[in-house]
Image (cartoon, protein in one colour):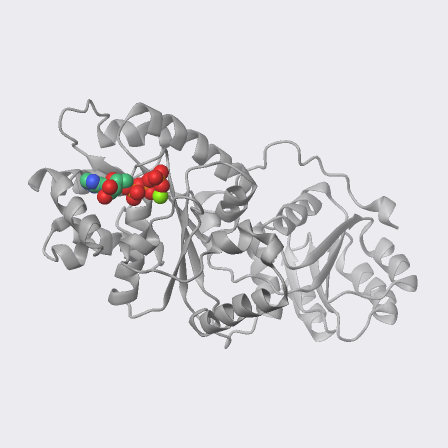
Length: 401
Ligand SMILES: Nc1ncnc2c1ncn2[C@@H]1O[C@H](COP(=O)(O)OP(=O)(O)OP(=O)(O)O)[C@@H](O)[C@H]1O
Ligand SMILES: [Mg+2]
């Protein structure tokens, strides 16, 4: 039957969902390891389900999309077990639908949930379907956010604590202050919200997390990855013990990923799967060009997500010709989430003493900007409202400093 699987052409750039829908999708918790099969009648519904299945929140679920609707489903399940969830698109009228659903009921395991996507906005039909054991009736056209919400309602335990939220920081080029901001925002999250935060320094050869936090960890990720020949049982045991210690921390934490400015398989994977991506850019042309490329790439990799957050850092470095924050933001169609001035004194003394900015000068306005950024990346607030006023407000504040 796999020959009826639709052949979607995903080499083309993924089509983007609206900003509104991206916000709604953002609320959906990751879907557990369930099997989902869809039997569609129209290409529109089939490709929406197919695009949903590519979403990072669906990466654990196994989704197959077939054409042929109800008839194909009944035939298919004569010889195959039914999955956890079936999406069934039907274009026929209510009477025909109810009688044909009986055929499906005969081959369907009672534990399988069935969601019908119909083309009739009919309340009586909705009631009949729900009464006969259908889990949900949706009216086409359906949006990815709606579909995922239905799956989430059926399969995600609302009482379970949400897993951690991951925030990836990457510099638009080297030296823009991405690591420093990643560490300071982590520190801010942990103190401000009293939350557990794990900082993963992914810059294997040149990481600075231990220096910034004035720590000397016994074992880095690098050592583990770089010396596979030492991966004997004892060594593995030691690593696992380490992980186990962190397991408690990982119960409901924030994970801040300090991603180095290199483009390879694992930085790409990290950025694709993070809940939030923060791009730290300096206000000059190379950063702008790289930021634009990064945003475009992320849009293709994360078609259903809100765009990355932009942080302009080291603004107003003496003697450097700079692009103004407004001109920087314009071609990107993104409001900066934070604009941070160049302050050699503050950053220099913090770095030299292995302390955070807030520990160095708690009253500095940069410290409050970082606290606002911590609110934004943890989903506790938005500093940049829609329209021009957000950026104007930030710029005005910057001028005052
Ligand atoms: N706003 C700022 N004002 C002054 N100095 C800053 C500012 N932001 C960062 N710095 C300094 O810039 C230097 C580079 O910072 P950092 O290592 O965080 O950058 P990065 O983007 O992670 O660089 P890399 O590409 O090496 O990973 C550090 O010395 C840091 O203290
Ligand atoms: Mg760095």
